[in-house]
Image (cartoon, rainbow, N blue to C red):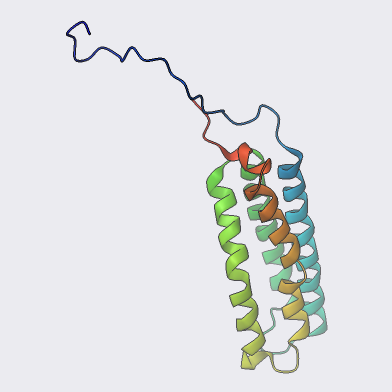
Length: 153
């Protein structure tokens, strides 16, 4: 030791933490495709529900569905873009929404305003849920999870 308390240690670095892969894993791309397929399925069920049950209480009108649909698609496009870029917070938010979806399904199923028209609103959420769960599994298991490692500046 040379007496300088601010000098770096002389020991060799033995552990190297690997960075994220240079090429995006196929699992991440597949997860984003699954998310989009689920969104399309859910949106189709939503439009069918708005058409079949139009005018009933508790069902959004077709005009409302057609206005909300592009807004939802823009949000999904933004989130999937962040997932493709390797943003960890985006994959965590998708996981949280997938975990909370069964509670929303339960709420729709017990809603008294939906009496007599529960099938399509429940299918809107139950239909794509396995695809969302599969997408989460792909980005939280290896090799997909390596894409979300912190990148060095």
